Image (cartoon, rainbow over all chains, first blue to last red):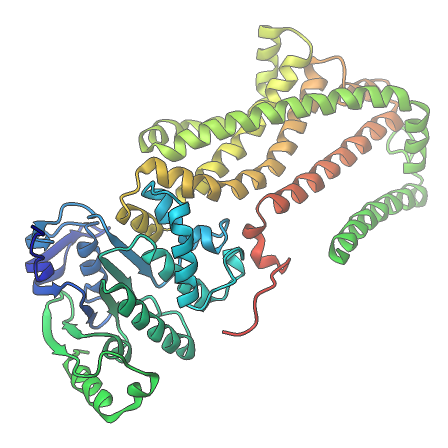
Amino acid sequence: MPQPEAAYLYQIRDVGLCYRDASGHDVEALSRVDCGIARGEFISFIGPSGCGKTTLLKLLSGLISPSRGELLFNDRKLDGPPEGIGMAFQDPLLLPWRNVIDNVLLPIEILRLPRQHYVGKAADLLTVVGLAGFETKASWQLSGGMRQRASLCRALINDPHVLLLDEPFGALDAFTREELWLILQELHRRTRGTMILITHQLHEAVFLSDRVVVLSNRPGHIVHEAIIDLPKQRSRDVAYSTEFIAQVDVLRKKIER
Amino acid sequence: MRGRLTYLLESVAGLVLAFVAWEAGVRLFGVPKFILPAPTAVFDEAYSKANILAYHAGLTISGTIASLTLGALLGVVVGVIIGYSRTASRLLFPLLGGFHALPMSAFIPIFTVWFGLGAIPKILAGVLIAFFPVAVNVVTGLRTIEPELWEMMRALRATKAQVFYKVGIPRAVPYFFASLKVAAAGAFIGNVVGEMLAAGEGLGYVLLLATSQLNMALAFAALTILLLLGIAMFLAFDALEKRVAPWAYRGEGRDTTRPAGE
């Protein structure tokens, strides 16, 4: 009998996080966050800078533990990084001494999986993101956008259940960013994995997500949640439609300044 | 390629200019030979004693190579231990810093007592000077891993050892090769000073002997050879450094054939 899959990949119940900063003050980064993240969902967290978005992502990755509340991953209490998560940051963090494909295969080496089984998959991923033919290029010879593409491939090479994205397109120009939105959408369609995006770009959140969660100023808590009522497959033109702009506007008004 | 040739020509031109200025200065002010001989007099002396100078230069070179090899090995071992273990770092790093502040030539008489006159004291002095920059640079390379990279690796449940040899060690390689330039000069200094104090052979000894006999032409011949050796070492390690880790020099405009677009 196959086990019935839980509806939620993550259950965040009344989670708060305090930490002591460098000067010895207690800082409350998150307070009373309550949220479920469904399997296969694309969810974005947006909010003003310093609202604890990155802290939330670190909690979800298991790198830190909540100071209060409960955080369940696959119905089990999260205790350290679980198996099957991929991460991508604003800085692509490719290892400059490795070529593109060796960077993509880094997680495979860390997980001690047979490399030869994943070389084909790495090439496929690179093709999807538009880096076919760049496999043996030195990673430091790539442009910023190309590095971020390679970084996405690296995050996905070991078929993670969930991809955690911390402002991955924050440092890119508008054209490259929109192109990468489409690529990320395509990757989500193919992998059917859960994707969790942290961003302060409203358009980005609305374009990519099934659901957008707005966090308040520090200490961060959820002030608004919106289901994005747009077709799943979104073209670049969608971002300029009236429905899209209306959705963005609703969210914009929920963000404190 | 053109860049490298220009660099070489410019280096040689700098050297030639220095000698021309020296020659002109000596002639212009009529400096006596026993104070500062002109380069032509120095080259004459060097030419007439070429065999002797070559023999002693060989000893200085072999001693320097021995010091650099041992010093670099020791530096890597100490650097890796300190870079890997926080505890070792707390125990050893301050000690290392204090130790470096000591004049290493002060150890030469002690080494002479322990090992007698000869090559060992000078080689050990070179080791002591050479190992420090290597150790510090290796530690820096290992310690400055980007925090996000740590997070990504930890999220993949990488062990500390895995992060260390997949990221830390390759990252430390250019730091290591950069430190070799400094370490080679240190090994060289240790050997020359050692030869002046305790060897009875080598260019440092020749320098000491020549000045005691007021043969300034020979002293400056020895100094000039030391200078040329120093330049050769510097250029060799500089080239090695850029060859081993080209990615670390991506800002210098060499081979940065970035693809167009994006």
